[in-house]
Image (cartoon, rainbow, N blue to C red; front, side, top):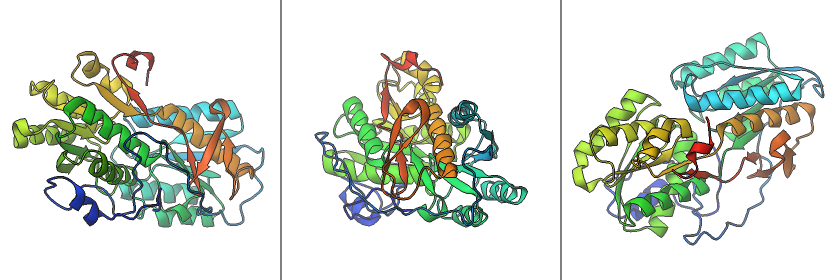
Length: 368
C-alpha cells in the first residue's frame, strides 16, 4: 500500500525519535511519512500519476443499472452501519444502482476474502470494500478486476493496483495532527500516553499511527509514548485493554488514544469506571452517538472523525462514475452528488475532506 509521502522515515527511525519510547514497535507501518507543520501551515499537494488498477474487458455500464456489493471490515457496529446507510442513500438517489452490504460480524480478513470471492463467482458489477489487511485482500480484488468488475475502496485501503479508486476519509497526516494536538491540549505537551487500535495490520490505523509518531516526534518531543495494544474491533477486549493500561501505568498514564469507533468509547468507559475522568484523557476516532454520554459528562473532551454516512455516499458515487467511464486515470476531481466536487489526491485517491473534532459544544448536532 502506498500513501501520502514525501519524507523518508521508516519505523525504526520513527521510534528512535519518540521521546522515551519503550520499543521500536508503535503499531504503525514502515512507510514514509509526511507530518504536517506544527503551526498548521497547509501542506503543498504533490502531484502523482494514477496508480490504481483497471477492470479487464469491462462491459459498457454507462447509465445502466448495476449490482453492487459493499463488504466492509465487519458489520453490526455503528460506524459501518453509517457507511452502509450512505451507500444506500446514494444508490436510491442515483436510481440506477442496486447496492447491498454484506460482511462478517468480526474483523476477519479470511472471512472478507471468502465473501468477496463468492460475489465474484455469483456475479456483480461493482465492489465496495474496506480492507482488514491491505496485502492479503489484494489477490481477490485483482481477481474481481480481471473479471471486469469495478472496484472501489473506502475507509481502509488495499494495495493501489488491486482497486481502481480509494475514497480517503481524511488525509492520514491530517488525522494525526488532529489527534496529537487534541491530546496535547487536554493532557499537556509532555503527556505519557498509550494507543488502543484494532490490529497492527489494519491499513488505515497503521498509517494514522505512523503519521502520529512522526508529528509527535516533531511537534511534541517531550511526550512519552508508552505502548500500542490491539483490541480486534471488539468492545469487551477494547475495554479490557484500556483497563489494563490504566492499571499497568497508574498515574504515569495521562492519555489514551482510541483508533477505532469501538476502542474509543470502550476506553472512555474504562476510564469512567476506574474513576479516572480528568486524570486520563481519552481522545479518539469514534461516532458521535457512541461518545455523547462521555462528552456530556466531561470525561471526554475531543472526538475526531468525519461523517461516515458521507464516506459511504461518496464511495458509491465514485463507483458509479468509474462504471460510467466518467472517472478515469488522470482525473483531478469527481462529482459526488450533494457533496459536490471531491479532489483526487495521490494518484488514485478521492479525498472526502478534513477531519472534524466533535466537542461538548457541537456533538449534539449530529446523529450517527
